[in-house]
Length: 393
Image (cartoon, rainbow, N blue to C red; front, side, top):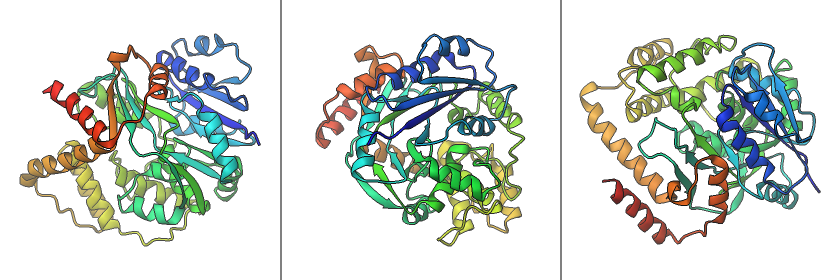
């Protein structure tokens, strides 16, 4: 069976990366797919770029005015009627042959959703990081069937990530599930400023079992205009970007029990609260709010934003009768320990490649490069990673 795969690409003034995201989809030989580019009132040459493809599989939509990110996702989702749907970032890309492989997986293991571990690509124009033009490929391969409530419990406890759940970013979901969520929540799917994480929370509440692939099918791009990166930076330009994001998303107010602190524990918490309010989320696990709060504080320390967010954290603690345990004089040591553990985990579970050596300059070329790679042994991967790190010292 050839499943219809619908790829939504929301975009706003990012024509320079969008063109490569679209091309990464079109490189697939699998024919039963369509692309919806949802242009959030861009003022650059986005429309010209999309129209230049002249491909009947591409639908171009433009919002009548500048919307919030969530509203743009909702706007695009309304135009998908059947099959499976995913959301691809406009600086992300699919790997060659990934649509065929996803279809085969769904045929062999019928499921309402499939998620996967994504690779990561740091674009050459990414000034948020020290290492640019870097490709990160997960070492582990294979797949498994997962129980949503078990993984959700681990995500809430911060043992796993939202991307380990069924969701729209880094996964395909049956439109039957989308319709079910909308039917239960006033005809609207999204109810949070952070739509990708919200989708993981609500979909895990209605999908009992789903496919998860450790083998990546897509690359999450990290470019100069990536939303997630901008919202945790501390210099003036990135703070301005964060302010714009908040001003453009007033139609989806942050839940009143929380303050906007852009780290996973608080985003997960906020998404769950919003989903509970519309009646779509009934957790099968007991929520330990003190633990979630403590994990949020820990993430702030690890990212080096604890002092800039301290006032918000104190307000969250007060609103929810929680204890704010952070002590300033431990933060530098704690920051060092947390980041050391993080880097050891990441660099021992992923293969890293400097893409400049392969003449890679965008996510399409990164996807082709990754597809050509031979999977190394774990020892070989560690040796190559260490060699890369030593060159930077």
